[in-house]
Length: 242
Length: 94
Image 1 (cartoon, each protein chain N blue to C red):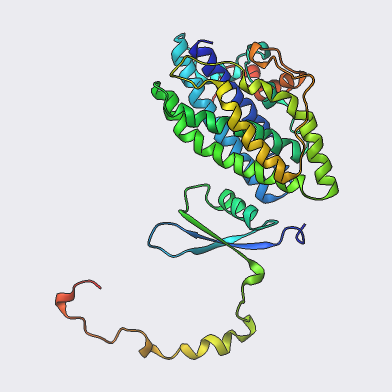
Image 2 (tube, rainbow over the protein chains, first blue to last red; image 1 turned 135 degrees about the vertical axis):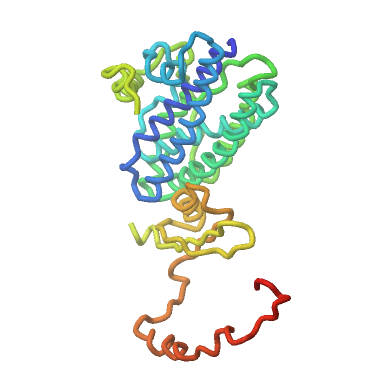
């Protein structure tokens, strides 16, 4: 895909997952996680902002980061299906975070070599943030997977629910030398997930029906509801500012 | 909740060369999650370069009821403060 589409897809991944995580604010199971989750959400939204601004600059039609975030409709969003999945329980949220971050960390590390100044700049900051997300989400997946009977059952249910969305992580490639080849990240992702799952006593399930389509704008019903909440202010009061 | 997630005390060192300082406490299931929580709760505004977490149960604290016998005897021994020395001018600020 051309650079604009790739940057926009990456920005969408980060904004939608960041918004999902923000939905936990005030609802986390304990105060400590109630701060940890928004911290992670803000990491993602920060990256999204830089990427949207860059996409707007590449596009050169005078749109801003806010236009791209708040004034595009569902079918124009190019995020992975994985990141729009509802939060579910804490197990699902942590597993989704692990799946995403275990991909993005090596992706951004590879992108440090990018010939594109902005991409390399984002990568420098985001690689560190994603390393922490992998560690934090990974530790929770381990503790819930190898925890009580209830937590283990919920964690395995989360794997059953979300694993079919992970194949889409590895589809597509940006312009060579600017963005890493996504398929090349697979071995590292497999290694990290296998390591966490082995400690968490979780089984990697077979995926008879992998789910894809986000990159083509074909989303699940849940994205519309998310966008309705996220965009309503700009839709109801166009041009409203802080 | 508190049985599964005991209390931990958090110490942060703001800069190299300074000592770790107590900043607060938190609940966590084990030392790894306590460290994560300390990072997430107490270093969000760039407060630190190093974190210690210590199980609160591992701390032996002085008994407030013994404050008088512990601390009052030091109150009238002003000669223990090094304020009775003349500093030679050449030393400058100490």
